Image (cartoon, rainbow, N blue to C red):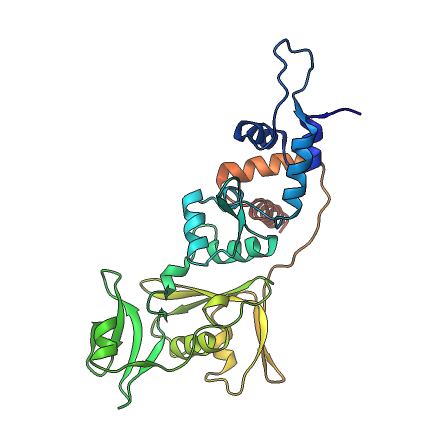
Amino acid sequence: MNEWYTQKEVADRLGVSKATVYHYGKQGKIKKIMDPYRLHREARYYKEDVDRLAIVRKQIPTGMRPSEVAKQLGLSVQSVYKYIKDDTIKALEVPFGDERTTYVISEEAFEEAKELLQFSESERVRKNEYYESSNDIALFQLFQSSDNLIARVIRNKELDWGFYLPNYQKWVNYEEGIERYSLNPCYGIHKEPFDNKGYVHIKILKGEDILYPFIDFIYELWGIENLGIREHDLWVNISLKAGEVPFTELPFPIEQLLLHVQEGTIEIAEGLVIVRSAYRKTNLELPIKILDKVKQFAENEKITMSQWVERALQQSIDEEE
């Protein structure tokens, strides 16, 4: 019995590419058999090392590495680590080498991050745009004092977090709002993350009566874990994770909200708010040559394969119509 594996056999044994096998050898994770006279056409690695690494890998959660996520989302690796740190991207910390750790992102966590960070091909909503973790406050969140002073969380021109006080028509920083005006949140903004079933996208112009009642409603029922908000000069974009949530009272006519839904559907039925994404996962079997080409085209444009295929299909549909 051979005491070694070829590079291809190592790749198959570990479930990685040949390039990764090469890097494992350079990193010392597996030992390459020296072949100074090039008697063998393919590099060989000691079987004992490979089998030991295979056992270790089985004990580590499977999923995507930060570098793979960065490539798929068109982000820098540093940005991915930042999103992992602020919990925008859910990841498991796992051992990596001697006294080091790395992160593994599950397929579900990747899909959730993709929906949130790729709000559209041109815009990516980032969690720090609508949530300030150090003070646990969210954009437009409603606060009130014991003497009924109302305030909303907003950011000033310098992007500092604070409160707008309608009664005084002024902005104050967070510390002043809490200490001087004794402001307290009117509701909680955290919920357990929903299963990833896509997002519904909503666009509401500033000044619309429904904007703030809707934001209060979704913060309390959905929580910041299940939505994304981006403020523009004239409107607000909201991405709402698909799901079903019970409610007792709707603070606005549902017909009024539906006017602002850009993608997906929102329904009211039997005491539930039902939010459904416009996207549905499907499996397509395509030749490997085509898949490789699509992957290359998508990488060149720094978008996902799904986005590239969707655009190509839409162009074909538009030409038919």
